Amino acid sequence: MLPSTTSADNPALTGRRLDEWVTTSVHEAGHVVVGVHLGIPIVEAWIRYRSGWFGGWQVLGRTSTGNALVNDNDSVPFTIGGLEAEAIHLVRRDGVSLARARRQVAGKRVHQCGDLADLDLYLTEADVTHAQAEAWTNDLLCAAWGSVENIAAALREHHRLSGRDLARLL
Image 1 (spheres, rainbow, N blue to C red):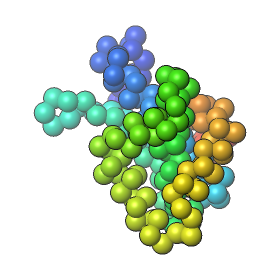
Image 2: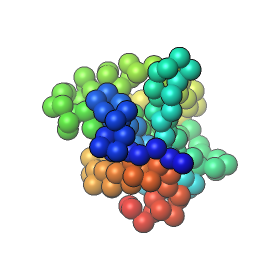
Image 3: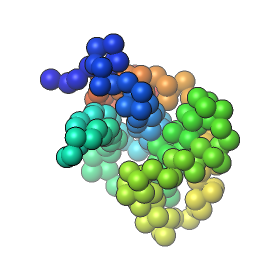
């Protein structure tokens, strides 16, 4: 059984935990919006939370492309999509500059071991620079922010969305 996603129904989902839940949903929605725009088939996206090994708390999320082969030039903006969506969310929510929001997102350990590590690998073979892909991705996500918010809200409510569900939300 999936846990409730509202703080009223689940007292554990308050404060920082609720913030991580919202931010993770926005992150995955960013991957989805960019992926669909690039023509990358999205199989599903999901978020969940669980207790950590030593009593901590952790939010997990993933956007799956199945076994679709994605070239490095598409992998770069697809990977940046989640990071940039988080940064835009911080700008809109907290009023910080985009540069500061990007630094905050890049400073998260989960991204250093995940998306940022993958991004370094993709950039070695891609024909685009990090800055070029980041600017393009930011423009796309800002133009499609309503879709990002719709997908993020649906992820928070349903935890898992199929590719068909995601297509209906775009």
